[in-house]
Length: 371
Image (tube, rainbow, N blue to C red; front, side, top):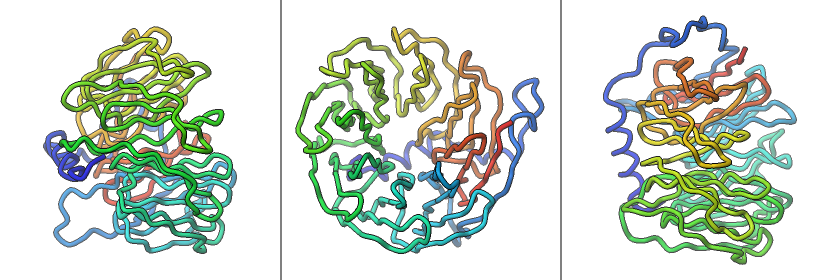
């Protein structure tokens, strides 16, 4: 989220990852056999290790096309690579990179936004270049496409809207940086019923007209030394849920931005809503809240660097925490399993049906079937 973002993530990762990850697969953490939860369908090594590379990371998880099953990964070496659901290579493009946010597949396009300030759009089927847009800020989350507009969030506090077909500028909203040390990251925009919801590093949540960028409401949520909101806003019929690194977990009225309830989770980084459960990932634990009241339901400690969003499916909470994929029971928060290929995973997995795609920190793309 700021100019000093790289220093922030290095500090976070070094502090949270004291030793090498365990070999794969580690012993199951429950009475269920390990192979009762996962089976590896295929895997591809996308990045060859660099000479003297120390603790590589792949913060941008893969993306999967719900229509064709195609999976796309953008890796630390700048490459964007597309594969079929069976693991057959379709196409690749070499770009500057690196990437903090996953690619987006929408309207027959693959769109990637890099830390170098460039956005590229490719034909999803053939990989041919369609358009490029250059902006002098670092893009830090997955692009969001709704209708004919693509939305992008930068680490420096800008929300950008482009025409998805041509890459032409439509509007932008700018939140000036506070000039302090910031936590690396930014949530991706949430676009619902013609309104864009976005959190910023100053602790504010803003609702904007999706077509014009006009402000509908602006609410200060995060407080303390690090009020950063790096979670994706979670939007329901009448509420917006966000989590701040300052420790504030909040439900806001969707129409006005007025607080409905507030709870505490120090160093909250990411959050995901599933039914009446709002799951928040902090630097030290995963916490489940009742989305209706804000009451804490459970909390589970973890170790690692939680740089990406959790995935909730089949009654499980899948949390990428740098060392691997922590699997929790959604209702109780109890640890069910820990999945790693030996190098850990930092980016969010992509899910389509029972197939989960995970990009390891050494650039191995793994297709995992949930049973």
